[in-house]
Image (cartoon, rainbow, N blue to C red):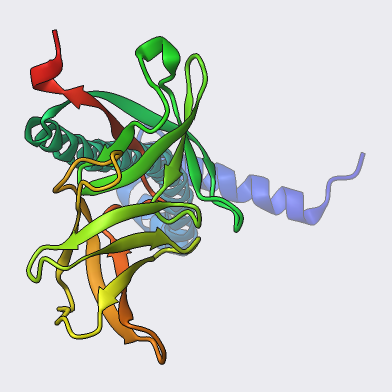
Length: 269
């Protein structure tokens, strides 16, 4: 079998390198020095090649470590984001519940807390469903309030749930009185996100941003509960009255917890 010149040359170089690098081989120091000088370029390239591959291996190991660390940090960041979201939600819920507790202390009636479990906010009706019913003592026409003021009234009851007609429902009406001017009118729902305070005398002064409270007339709502704030005043072209746009104090489309009012505490046994 014929051996190529390239193979022979490679073997020769390797043998020479072995002789040079082996101090036990019987060569004088001068000959060894000359041979080292001749093969110095080869040794330099070989050494650089070894270093190059070592660097590549180290770089690959480092890259793998960095990728694993990056994945771990990303997972930790997602976990922290979830925790922050949960804490923010707890804080918002605590604020709502604090308002309810404050209102509970102010109202002279017995109350029961309830959660909103359903909504019907179509153009025909503005209703919510709460998780309390006749089993909990709920009956029709009971007042429903939130921390900021009146939500509406009970219009239908089931054993464990009830329907609440919101103030903004078109069929809703409640007696209102302005806090500053003490003018009395009728607050009616519009089916939208605002109310109308009707039957205000033309010659009376109505203040924008005045607070509108329940007047206590009508037998459903107690006097002094917050309804909303006057945002605009309009004068009808004909008639003896003017009317005002009212912004509800309760964000009715976002309500989550409410209080249902029973009866005066002094009447409780």
